[in-house]
Image (cartoon, rainbow over all chains, first blue to last red; front, top):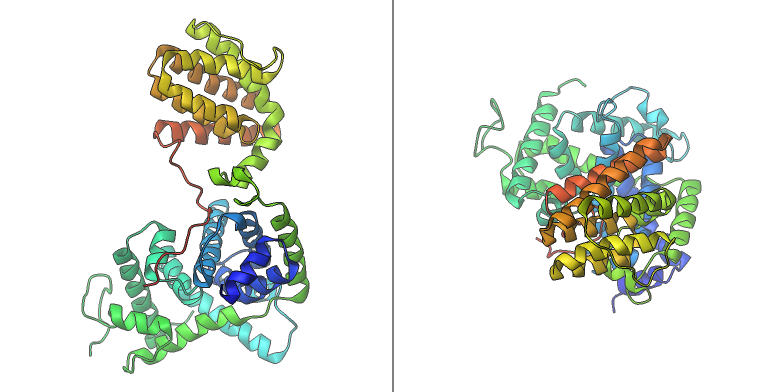
Length: 182
Length: 239
């Protein structure tokens, strides 16, 4: 039994310490994923993701990588649900005031302010991609999902995922290289 | 080495190819002139996953999750998990149980009258809404032995997941291929829609949405093979 197996078994038994560990291990990346994809309230959505995980925890079996993948797939579906609810709004809000509206980050220290500026830049760059290109790149980079896992999550073939990945990176490379103002 | 020119979706053999893309995503430096800017951007994307969650938010989430996990079904202690029913459906059926119970009762009456099929009383007590459901199901089951299996399934689901029970009954009708079965299901859907229209506010909308989703699935003949989009899956082999 691996350390993760023990941790997960404790979580299944409802041990608070185990859930805290799982949450602390994965939540920053999941929240980053939600932010990049333009979640209106990433903290609320993060809570919904974990509630869904807790509800279905009895049905999961797998290793640590599989658990991470599963959590991100749940997050991905939550994002899609939110997109559907917000069909009349832009998928990615690029409002200048957006960073100030993001709750959950810690205090207004200088380095954090700089991080928020960088976050905004990243969000703006990713907003130039198609939704599918953005989904693929963020699931792969932030979620650490494999091509096969992303394909399964998005209902596409691995080849299609690779194509979306290539095109997304090419577009970003062009934006960065040409210094396109955002 | 190639440069970026023109429409990237139409050109081939340009940076990054699949191998270079994988290297970028892994965080490796492809060591090519084109990679400098994009590698930095990928690193910035990855760094978004390092931002700390506010303590208050984390505490609230963990408390919610622990509470939820404590009541979540598990295969080793709760056999109902084995049928992989999404919890949200159970919650939904709880909210709508009163309303849908009336739907089912109305359906039974409509089915019996509309189809002209005789009905038989079962173990349930007259007056109980399950009694009405039993009668409708038996009316369908008499027509086709294969449908009986779906009917039994529907019976088992009624108390925990009423919409799923409706679907199972619908599939029984489809398998039965009898006018009686079809009439029962048609009546069921009609009654559900009527009651849904008669309700008010979110409950009405929810009911219509539920019934519409059910009808859509039924029309696609995928009632029994559907899966929930958020249901967990076992991890696949890493690439």
